[in-house]
Image (cartoon, rainbow, N blue to C red; front, side, top):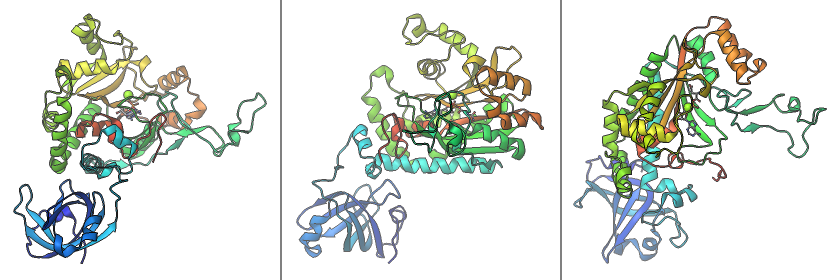
Length: 479
Ligand code: 4AD
Ligand code: MG
């Protein structure tokens, strides 16, 4: 008999029919006559109740049905009399597919800390929390493609190994096949990368944007969605060394349209989660409330998770310039009382405490900050007439801070070449990028959405390590 997924079975009304289900034991309770097993197969957060007649199953078999053992159950679908479930399966035949020694199995049917679960990331997906998170992660990835596909964007696969530093931040992972103990050397003693695998210095990409721009100059509207690597040694709850980024790039768009696209995109994704992931969101909403209760009153979110998601879908994002943001911050209570850790001044990059003040305390909704000083932004951003700012935009979200970074791009060849030189980028490394400005260049714009930052928001999880299956962070590449 072919297996039925628990997700489908829980909706079924074919009472009396014979079914086969397979999954992992979440809990088992028993008395002298019957045992109840809660079985989960990952297709849905809810468990299926299996009712077992203790007399007929035999003692040995019953004993080996322990938490997290894997079972195949054949039985009859019956209407459940128990609370909180509509159907259950009266077992006729049970086969143990995989034993789980209860003495050694690290997951117990009780609440574990997220920190502990990170140490057993190979098993943590079997918990309700991580099952919900990774089903939502899948749904969001699917929605990303659906959003762009509906709008005629082309999904462009940009390289993971690159010879350029798109962000100019220099926090890259080197890719090399040279022998670290005995590399070929130049006469001056430096490593001769001409003898390396690619005949030059290469790194893991920090962004697919530059190649994305090449695509937009031909296909009009493209997006990338791929792994991104940054060797920034920031051990925060918002940074990963390996994360996933979605980068749309659109020919003929200017800053205004870029902002509209970003806002539409985020709202679409959140709405998709609300429509398609409600079971998991309800579970995470509950979890979120319990986590918030542990926090100090003033740090608590004044909305529940689902409430927060609905709020973002419904409210227009606030749009202000960096200059306006700095004025608001200089006038703010925490600034005047010296409560900010970092200084606020025009020309200095905003820190996450400033961004969160603007979003969570001042506007109380998502904010798009634009027109940053050119010195604190990447070389490729479109310079404004004022000579001081660039057409940059950062989207800031409650509880997260920056979720999107983007800009209109500099399409003036001279300005771009000068700016690249100023920040130390060699023309010979970037000739192909500059070429687009020589041959049919046009205004264009794009942005990057950090996929895990989006997931932090949608799932209400507090640490970015808990929304990616196997996190890579400084000193951690287990699993
Ligand atoms: O602001 P960033 O650095 O922008 C770019 O890389 C541009 N090339 C994007 C573009 O215009 N096409 O990064 C974009 C987003 C951030 O807003 C953040 O959400 C996420 O990527 N991000 C990270 N997420 C997790 N861990 C990190 N270390 C991240 N660094 C950036
Ligand atoms: Mg940024």
